[in-house]
Amino acid sequence: MEFRFEQLVSVPRETLFQFYENPDHLNNLHADLPEFRLLHHESSIRPGSTVWVEQTLAGCIPMVMGFRHIVYEPPCLFGEEMIHGPFSLFNHMHEFEEVGDKTIVRDILNIRLAWPYGGEIGTRLFAAGAIRSLFAFRNRTLQRMAGSGELAALTAADQRAGT
Image (cartoon, rainbow, N blue to C red; front, side):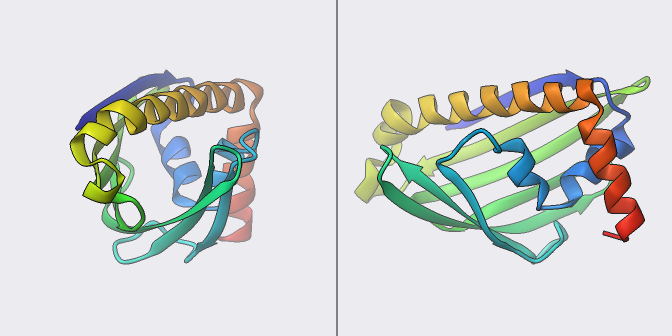
């Protein structure tokens, strides 16, 4: 099942891409979601690097998911695929399109739950709503961070630290 999410962010493309280059910023995007936890990353989104997260379902079921980065074309595109978790297919591409001093950020996901979790039917009945809610939340958070200057400040701090 394919999902496409798009939003215009009032931040230059290079700044927004640099923000996403630091996997630690997943914590910033999900700060108000207690069910999300960043477990481990390799400080990079270059191909071959991995990110591991835990998502708690129904308030009590922890699910560990691992992702391997497969595409890296700064400042336009990066992407990852799931290497551990409940999906038999999970590809996520992040596209960044420059629009003056703003950026269109586009998330394109192709997902399917593994058959023990319901396969295509489970994807449509359960995962689809959760994915839409998660990206609506992320979009609101990204807009808030861009508008408050937090996103630019985090990116500047990363540059000073050399990350």
